[in-house]
Length: 308
Figure 1 (spheres, rainbow, N blue to C red):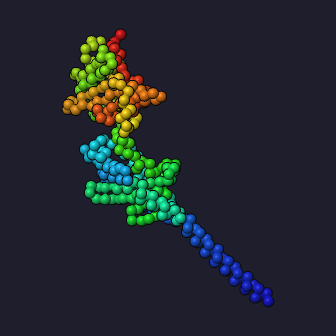
Figure 2 (figure 1 turned 120 degrees about the vertical axis):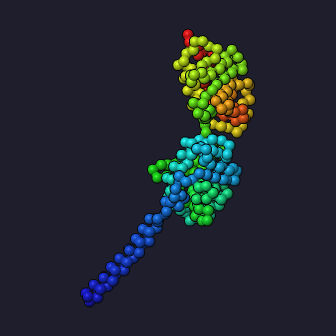
Figure 3 (figure 1 turned 30 degrees about the vertical axis):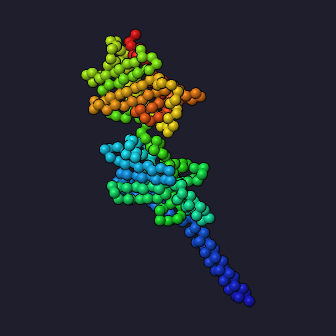
């Protein structure tokens, strides 16, 4: 009797052990699903020289030529943003597939309003996928073109909306430097004050040094500081609506010419009501906004440079 009982207990033990093993195996395999971190990466990012970001309402083409990244073959691209874009491509990894019950809805939304990302090396397409996210921009999703499974994308160690940089418009990609040229090629600067012509002044280069035309005694420290501030002047934001300029004539106009005869210009207008930003017109065509603190260093009349 005891022997039969022992055999029965042994069989029960073996069965329970097998059941535990099966539960552990399937449970463990589900929670440690291995996802290829390189699912949305290319082998050699240094070979990428063109990136196309297409959505239902815009197409952004970033292309590298003449030692610069350019936006839609029209503007110089913000190099810092391009660096961030490549860092995103290199560091973003799929954390997990989207829950099965959400596959269809997320996939359809990506197809409808996501950004189609294409990476090229020369004419060769190296990688393409669709990127987007939830309505609150708190979760980013990528999916392969040939697949319907979206993945939750993260950058390990950071809480960031991975798809954010892929959703920038053309204005967002533009280089923010107003006078983006080599200042060793500086030839002349003209500053005009339409409301007060007596404040106008010209700065020219003579013997590799800036000279304020018509002023015998010049405060060179102030002159050099002014040129430094102009050289690093950056736009806070390019805007689409030129109506921001409809508040009178410019308060100051700056035009710069380089030794090759190319000209660069910006017209500043009065600060908008209830705002700390100055509207401006870049190159006579592109409306933009500048922080008031930047303009304080630029809006200098002729007498400011006279040595007392």
